[in-house]
Length: 385
Image 1 (cartoon, rainbow, N blue to C red):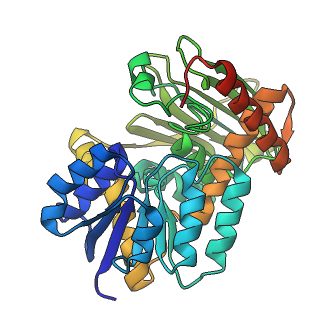
Image 2 (cartoon, helix red, strand yellow; image 1 turned 135 degrees about the horizontal axis):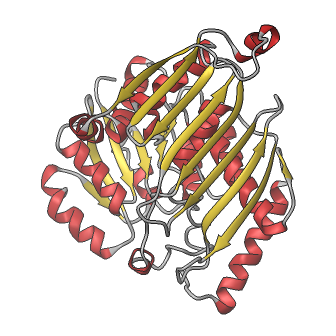
């Protein structure tokens, strides 16, 4: 295969941007041949922008997949549909790339992953575009090389996802359990939760507090604090919100051989000349300082613009196409989507029950709790999907 024929399912805000990446020639060795959406408004947009370029329109995702016009699909629909559509696509011979999150609950995503595993001839990926960020990739190198040492704690404050009431009012599915499946955890933070486990590993337990509709007329969580414990004895704290301004985006990893901080577009790695464990074993001073050196990296405004245009989503798409044609390893394998979602589900479950949640948790219990909230929403919600 020299050129991959792509279909995009869901051409709303994100899906339409993906369409333009293809039509503007940003995706190498690939061509957009079909799109799908159930909205008359989006159909009109496709007729004006895409039909002149020979792109077919469908209002049924199965019809698109069965059309024979595509080799691969990108699924950019509301969250609940990701596993359902991906399973159908994979079972019908389509290389499949899904937008984040992988789904709303792990049980459905597990079924999707099992389907993908049953079709090793197909490429299955997820749009974790932040894995292309040079700062996070350098952090990953430090962790995997052992240069950072054994992690003691990982903390992330990500409160710069400011969303006013007008944001939630623009679409009926936003800010609802039935339409979106959650709030800040399932909408804004899947990238950070993915990076949290990509760099720090998976926790074994979660204790969390989540506030629903804080300063907003919505049914879902928009303010979260979670404490995590790891098998190694390390701990983690994840704090996020959508009502703070200007907010903070700061990741800290404290480890035996140093400390890593990513604050917005700046990275600082303080590397110890001797590990804290070794230093402590021989030190005789009352209040010493361990000799260290600092390594700093920064992405400037030009670099950020380049990253947005040619890396991130575009980078994941080009990597996905290269995986199909050249067997290039995926930056973000689809099977990885369940990891960040597992943390997200555990945070929700802990906040709902007021209990520490061990991982793996009872997936059926999570679904039952989610269904309770969907039922309450249907009866007396502030906002309905």
